[in-house]
Amino acid sequence: LPAPAPAPAPAPAPVDPNAPPPPPADPNAAPPVDPNVPPAPPPEPGRVDNAAGGFSYVVPAGWKVSDNTQLSYGQALLTKVPEAGAEAPSDTSVLLGRLDLKLFAGAETDNAKAATRLASDMGEFFMPFAGTRQGQEAGPLDAAGLPGAFSSYEVKFTDPAKPNGQIWAGVVGDVPPAGAPRGQRTPERWFVVWLGSANHPVDKGAAATLAQSIRSFTPPPPPPPPAPDPNAPAPDPNAPPARPGVGVPVPVTDAPPGMMPAG
Image (cartoon, rainbow, N blue to C red; front, side, top):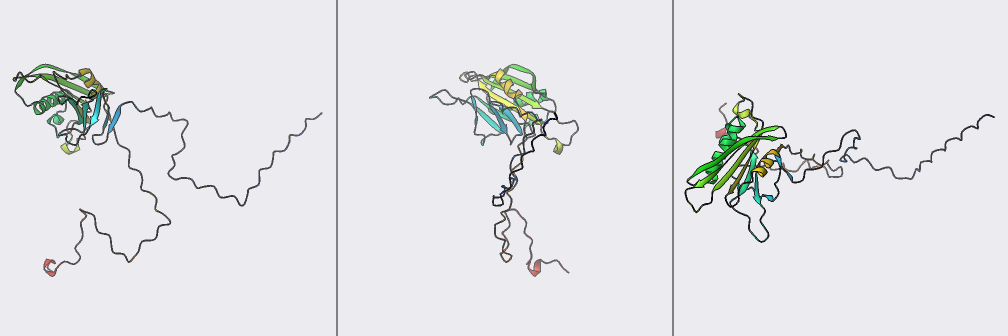
């Protein structure tokens, strides 16, 4: 016997003419997720973006980001988290920032020389006391492919009442191309300066880890301006013009006759 014919497909439900129209698509909604694109990696614990310096870094354990408004150099200041009931020590801190030409070390095209110059200059700036440098060390750094170098030393002060001062300076990033004009040397190098003393020694391992955690960072573009309100009233064509903003040149249309150029 022949097989029975398949049952016909059910007819689609009739459209309700009184149903409200579907809401319009949100132009600001996020685009649909592409299943072929791998998901973004989760944020790294402790990583901080610094838009002013164009870099990010991982804050060492036991330290915190502090107010940087009083910094003479750099764009970030780290201070040690004090123990419960105690104040933060004043003889240790960490500076981070872009290595630009505000620092003499920024003119050094070799990272090792830049780190040495940075350690020397910062030591004289933050420890301006008579003494002798000792225990100098230097070596390379690698921040996920960004080359770098560090330099460190200790200062035994002439005043025996002062505990020895310590400094560790690291530089990471790409050196500007040789022969680049001064105005075209985009600084793509960053520095770490870790200051300490015999009472609060520099953690050299943590300093190297901090410097090698630096990555280039570009802040996202600002959000687009909101769409104009279609229900907003039209501007009054008879309204006086808006006052120009501060710093905007204003053409002079009613100059006195004495200021007019000779015809």
